[in-house]
Amino acid sequence: MTKSALQIARACYQPKLPKALKGHVKAVGGEATQSVADQEDIKRLFPNTYGMPLITFEATDEAAGFPPVNVGVILSGGQAPGGHNVISGLFDGIKKLNPQSRLYGFILGPGGLVDHNYKELTADIIDEYRNTGGFDIIGSGRTKLETVDQFEKGYEILKELDIKALVIIGGDDSNTNACVLAEYYAAQGYGVQVIGCPKTIDGDLKNAMIETSFGFDTACKTYAEVIGNIQRDCNSARKYWHFIKLMGRSASHIALECALQTQPNVCLVSEEVEARNMSLDDIVTYIAGIVAMRAERGDNFGTVLVPEGLIEFIPAMKRLIAELNDFLASNAAEFAHIKKSHQRDYIISKLTPDNAAVYASLPEGVARQLTLDRDPHGNVQVSLIETEKLLSEMVGTKLAAWKAEGRYKGKFATQHHFFGYEGRCAAPSNFDADYCYSLGFAASALIACGKTGYMASVRNTTAPAEAWVAGGVPITMMMNMERRHGEMKPVIQKALVDLNGAPFKTFAAQRERWARETDYVYPGPIQYFGPTEVCDQPSKTLQLEQGVVK
Image (cartoon, rainbow, N blue to C red; front, side, top):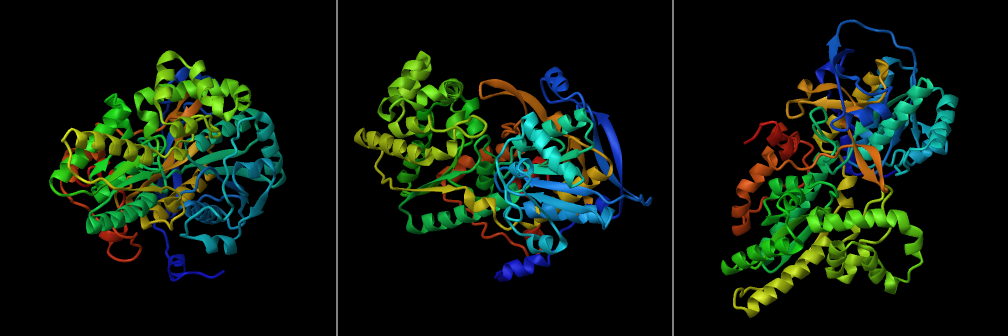
């Protein structure tokens, strides 16, 4: 395999670990926990894994002998930078416990467990993937583990390979599945531990114990580099408005972090749109107003950041999509037999009057995209909706009307971008390389102390890695009940942008100036080598949340 100079150099990088994980480790239990909401329902569904204490790891001088253990690992869901380092940390952690321990990777996600598709991950394989991006060491998949048949098929291969612990690296849905699996195996007395690791570039898997999901830092730095490049081009040509859609279907953490790093003229935050009960026209008017204001200054150019999931946060659209999700979940077979040319009228005839009116008002293309195949969780695939083009077209239409009224005299030409896959498999930043390696090591420590139904946790992440606090958090602690496929299901509660939090308040305090002036920041590529203040900085979001910067 041919390697780039960067790959060769990064292979030599030794990720930093919290002090507590470097030597002998002891687990210190905290207070009992409860779910964030719907406590009685969650407790009833998870009687064996509910209410467990928080775990913190501390250094100890006492060496404890540990027998060899076979561990399985699964990469689940979309890719995120640093996944290979979680596996590397897990491998090194179980080998440190006992050199005879073995690690098995299940191929292409949870489906590999059910289909008994696996390979042993040896030192030679692991060493090829240290500090690299992607999930290609074993691949990933989106199979949901939710049926007894799947659990039993998985147990067959775990028993055959004598695997006593399974680590599932994934986002909120994948870790929900991990918790369901942990509960089932505990109820059956199978003696298989299930541990989760917090992954998602979207940044919406976080709480007091999970300060950030891995991959968020690298993905945002990757996107911010390209946004900075576009803004430099924008400020050079001075003739285009760039509408840039960014990944993040359920929260605007990526858009907000990229705005804090690059200072665009406009950044929409879905959570604010919902809180202010803004309509699509309100959003268009807001953007058009900034375009007109800059035009008066002679600046017929700018950048607009759009969160991928914006359309679902517009209250009227949210109500429409919720009804569409439930209707299509119950009537998918009937809908599939409706001619494409009649589908729009069919949907309108089946919706409540208010939602029917909203649906009828949408451009044909957007209306069509709202009825396309759902994702595995029964949700609209918002990444297929070209929100950036919808907004720019509507802004153009409004500006044309204003021009006819004499309210606008500028020029409005647009370019469109969607940054998504470009950031999911980037080589991890130093922060993510260290954080992920620590998560893997923490997972091995949870295995060593016999825990199941826990997610590996590393906190105090704005401090030097030496001072990070490693431990584990019961997955049930993060759960609530939500409607999926028309039924109430236990799921990990997503963390949305906090409109009272320091990151949003910092952004809100500066956005009027960014809108008016051309005050772009050009972050450049991720720095791996050089001064600590350049190379090891966590995200602006983490720094602001923890009060490290003002």
